Image 1 (cartoon, one colour):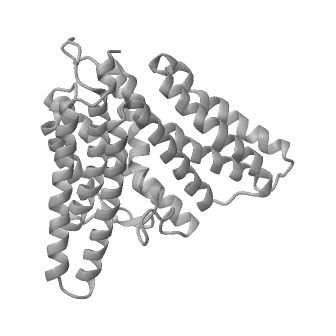
Image 2: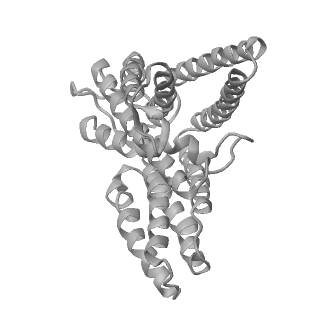
Length: 325
């Protein structure tokens, strides 16, 4: 792969400018709403909106810094995010003393190994695509059995396996995009930076979640799963699919996709992002918590911010790898 694909290019800076401009406008809207909003429910909604913006500014700042350092910096960044998200997941689903040594292997062996293999390049795809779903999935119950604690054995192993699968394996497919040699469906090589493709994916995944909430609040009538999350509706998902697809098509200049391919990618990412958020809501409802942790005081944790990305990343990666490499 040409070295230029590993570093930011002019398009990267344009994307960053677009993101910062959009956040600045949203922040200005929040300030105006805070000054002229009404008391009661409207005031609470404004405060939540402003808190969400602070989270976005934090995430964007970290992601932009990582992007400017090139693909190695981004792989390290995602490794740290995976580690933190897995920590939140394990804290939310408590284990027993007999699982401590198993967790040591999960946190300090399998998680770093997955990202080392990602960073080693796409030629290691056959290994990093199976090391967690095969080898780690077999290791976890075996190591737990050696500890000699049979109480809720299957439940404990399933918790650890699912946390590792979602927080590490699935999320690691996002930085794996940086190592693909991309071509257009017309057969010509794409000469852009892979960092742009990663930024495109993260941007539309996060936008899809926001747009789903907007559409659900505006025209939502039919709740998908009332016992899991009463705010997510079929109308919201369909509206988000449409608007995210259009935005993705407008941003196709940052990708190897033609406009209709970018639109379809936006739809696919929206569906998977929605399923990821709904699945995590079910887990939190089961555990009796509202958030997996605290990233910004009073506003959720790291896993709450990336659950949509975790579910969308492997699908986006494999579709891209199959059709555009």
